[in-house]
Image 1: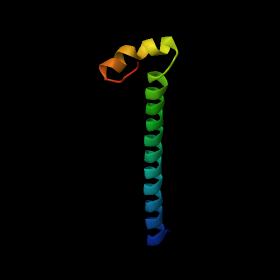
Image 2: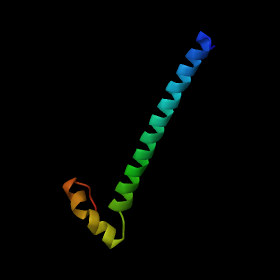
Image 3: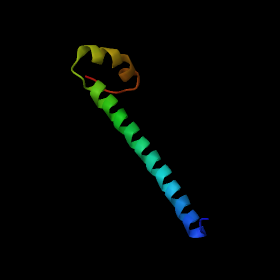
Image 4: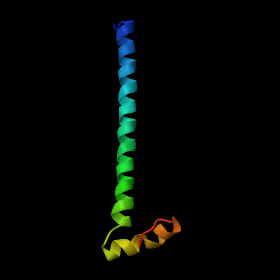
Length: 64
């Protein structure tokens, strides 16, 4: 049988794990967003540039 201290410690550990996972997900989403903006936005590959050209201009993202 667990004591109150063990139960409280387990609850804190669960909250910490959930928060860590949420922060890791947010960080990875931010990295993916930056790669998409910088990688596609300033790509010198014509096919990549043309594929995203209209969307960039519609969102006022400078590409040239």
